[in-house]
Length: 308
Image 1: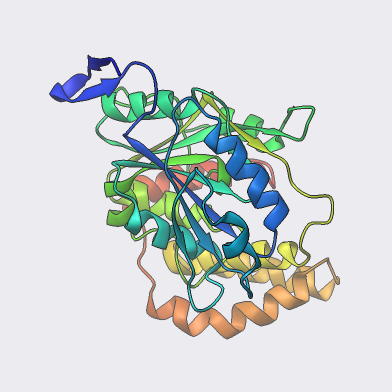
Image 2: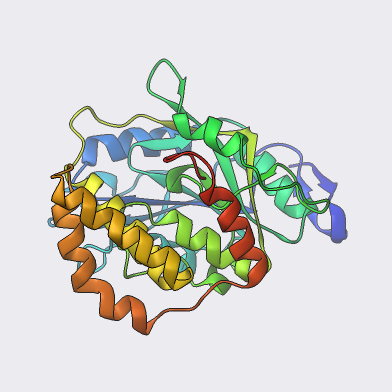
């Protein structure tokens, strides 16, 4: 395999399998969808090793993926770890960069190599958020426009558009930065968990950017799991309690209480679960440094639902 010189004196592959990047996949009880994802990852020119975290309740997934050529390692935690399963996968990865996929998403050919090249060239870059294309028709996920329109100013030592949010299954991280930031927070479990990690990466001095030259393919099942609305509402309030000034957190809590009073979808469950987790959030509270809080406030001024 031919190589070429990368900044800093490292050697990067010009073609063929790319040894710089691993793909982490979390899954639960969606064996057919997972196999489609693994087949797509195995067909990539980068041939990335894949670490699968199986949150399933039985052996169906383990038996189905046994011997699959893409799978370097299958991890089976004792309980459903939700998004925190990605932390487990990153700890077991042996490459400097890790891309995330869910069991219904994968990467376009060449995107992982381009991501590794960008991370090689920009040592402060901690996370790349990719453009997400949805379904067989390859429609742009609405989040693409939101991220592209981020009001945060560009930074000379980073590519792309600085953001404080991303889609978990369409992101690539520098392993060192991810571990330094603590990964995905266990209190959130799943649903809108990305914002808190973006905050923590930025607070640690790492860059978080949207780079549309990278592409992830997302093929969600028509019968998605219920309850996501409640989880996203709950985790938005918990994220503000964990990192933002108290007036911001109180305003988020008041908005959720009002939504519950108006019987908005998922709001009552979200309010109940927020109260259950509030003591733990307060105990783990750590406010953002001023420059990151300033960036978060710039995003707060965007129209509702528009902040990356």
